[in-house]
Amino acid sequence: MRNFDELTEKEVLALAIGNEEEDGRIYADFAEAMRDDYPSTGRVFSEMAAEEGEHRRRLIDLYRGKFGEHIPLIRRQDVRGFVQHKPVWQLRPLGIDTVRRQAQMMEAETQRFYRLAAARSTDASIRKLLGDLAEIEAQHEHTADRLVAENVPSDVQHEEAEVQRRLFLLRVIQPGLAGLMDGSVSTLAPVFASAFATGRSWDAFLVGLAASVGAGISMGFAEALSDNGSLTGRGAPWIRGLICGLMTTLGGIGHTLPFMIQQFWTATVVAVAVVIVELGVITWIRWRFMDTPPISAAMQVGFGGALVFATGILIGAS
Image (cartoon, rainbow, N blue to C red; front, side, top):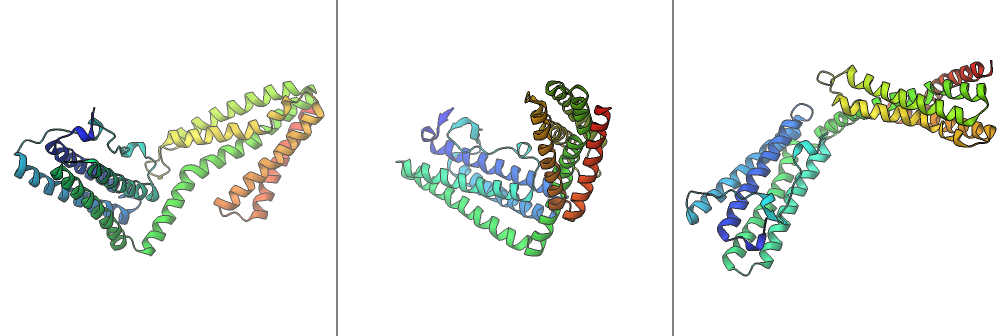
């Protein structure tokens, strides 16, 4: 790698051409990723990709006039300290806010880098060139604002925000809530049954740990294999499976950990308190994200939890 201030004017211009080309391809990737769920935002990034292409052509014309036809391949990663932008595949799952924020960062970071480099340069021609590149990036930022205003009016932004909310529910909240409910409720019976059957906290802890981890693995695979997301839009199956599995394990571990306390009745009381908190969290999530009335959600969750809890105590005490 070479330092930016070691590059010649010819190499700086070649780097600028490569930079514009890469930015244009990133914007085209954003447009493709947004095309199905957010078509208006997709059009914004298609136009921004076209703008980058136009700036690239202007830079190439300038390069040809000064240095000829051959443009050396100089990439961002070849220059120490140059701006590095994450590829699109590292930013998934992509949402409206993610891509717009990334676009703003791309333009602002590149503009700032060119201005700092111009301030350090003692060569008048390089200084002018870097200043011109900074102005081009500033124009890009204004162009982005204009394109958003033209293509994404407030009503469309509200509609896209609602789509984003629904996708978040499908891809994160629903699998997480399913796992949390299963882990919190289904493990109650084995944990408290073993606790009252043996009267020993450690035995209840081992049973609860095994039940929680086992349920997490089972629910994770079940969620991942149930739907590949291609038709329902629920996103990558392995992400949903991971979310569901982790939340299932978390739901069971919560009321299992108190049984690490050696005093049996103290551990039991703490575990019951944790169960109440878990059911309260589930009720809040159902009310906050699933539009379930709070009283109805509390009754549904509480009734189911009470049935499983009573089942565990009755079996363990028999």
